[in-house]
Image 1 (cartoon, rainbow over the protein chains, first blue to last red):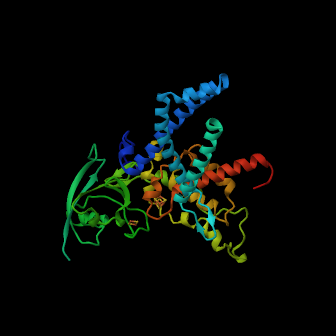
Image 2 (image 1 turned 60 degrees about the vertical axis):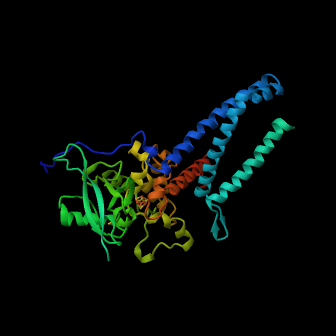
Length: 131
Length: 248
Ligand code: SF4
Ligand code: FES
């Protein structure tokens, strides 16, 4: 077919603002961005631990008591909780557990994991700070 | 029954004449039971015979009538006009695919991906038909039946930003179909399909946006299939590390 001319390809590509197109995309982007706070907090925490390792436990606690660190920690906590919740939910959606004839729902995984998170966090706080 | 008028804005693009696509607006009288596809058919029959789009079954089975309706990938035959009452309805070709004309997109890439994952039952050795069919229990069927409902409408690809960024990505429907065969108890082609779904642009490219499963008109949940593919791949890799021989 000699007359089968090729025309320039027209294709709608992803625009930089694609994630504002609908609510799901935006929630996805929020989920991804909140991980930045998780990473930043981890770095701060590792730095704090290094103070403990090289100095004393008091150095570590003093560092954590710095108002700027406390403020950032609170913000990071909110974002981390959101980030964790989205993944707990996804975990429930991707790997439901079969109990008898029914399967667990994603929100059940979310609730169970949040409870576990609180318990484990409390244990960690107790070990590091309260003890 | 009373008739309302729908205002529809449709992408027009005729590569032999138009340098760029543009919108053309049509007024279509409609009844309560009419869908966007009916409106397109009305336009073609009564107003403008040159409007080009794909369709066949009118009942959500053939998967050929997909388009972006008000920005969302949908089957035009499953979108009722009355749901858009009082608004202009915008109908555009599905995102991420090359446009051939008006609403018709080039499906070549998806067709190649479908063939690539070998969507048929692979047996190490075929038994002759006289020996009967390969039997399967209801429980075994349940493992994959959800993923076998795909109608190849490609809406999930139009919804997937990862595919929009990298068209080499195997994508939702093809991975879901691969998983459907991997989980089929009659299939013995895991060794063949595993490398395909786990290569660079396979399942691992997915970052769980999840929009594929939102737009899928058949409840296939490709997002789930992709994650299950990842889980299978990861457990297989660990198994072969721990038990280099056997242990499959
Ligand atoms: S998985 Fe769903 S959205 Fe994707 S092609 Fe199949 S039917 Fe269409
Ligand atoms: S025309 Fe067949 S799915 Fe819409």
